[in-house]
Image: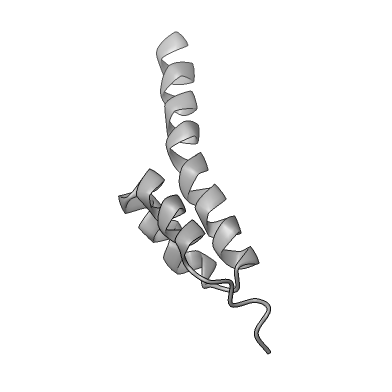
Length: 60
């Protein structure tokens, strides 16, 4: 039982970073699905890249 709980917590932690990245991308006017997968491959680096990119949601 302890191993299953430990593994599920690890998976939840590993998926939390791409979910946060995709939500940030959505707020910045970018495709959240693409950034979710980028966040899976490059978890921390994707968030920093998103901070450096310009905000597209304000352009109309």
